[in-house]
Length: 187
Ligand code: GRF
Image 1 (cartoon, rainbow, N blue to C red):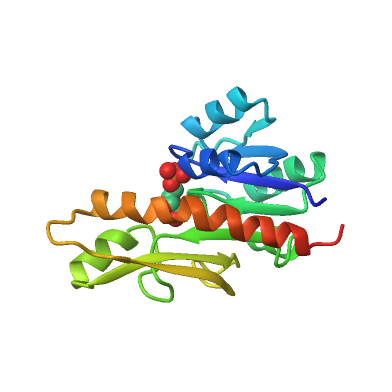
Image 2 (cartoon, rainbow, N blue to C red; image 1 turned 60 degrees about the vertical axis):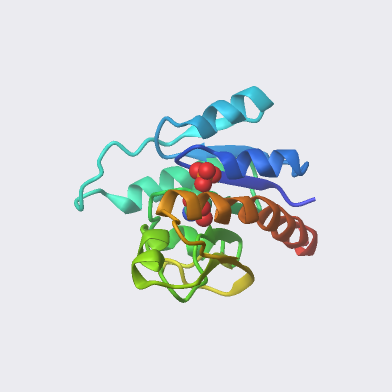
């Protein structure tokens, strides 16, 4: 069976959902100390902190990306699932793991790419938001769309409330798509 890495930066609620859905995760990798690493520790999954200490534009992305790739090689990873990972990685990882890096994004792509998608969608007055599971490429929030699900916007929605309802969908849809993807990979 193909070996899975999950990349996190935040609460790790998607990671938790994957574990609840019984996906086998071989390494959890984070770019900063975060709850996702604690979830990995508690579940007995190897955790790697490849820390990004420089959050400026001068951040040296290529060496950072090579460090991330070294952790993947060490754990013989076949598929990466980004789950709220907030660092944009450099092209070498997308060459090495071509079509083997997945992402979930809290909008119906190609609408509202970027880090503030839920707020942007609300600001735009959309009536339907949602999430997209896609293959990640060096271009942010592009790449082949694998699955999408709509989430209605309710009156009185804030970005937080709407994002939480979107995440409830992602927690079901993403593990399902990853499972299918893993099954389709021959190692
Ligand atoms: C998800 O909404 C995902 O689409 C976005 O970041 C969120 C991750 O949530 N990229 P969490 O940190 O797992 O709770």
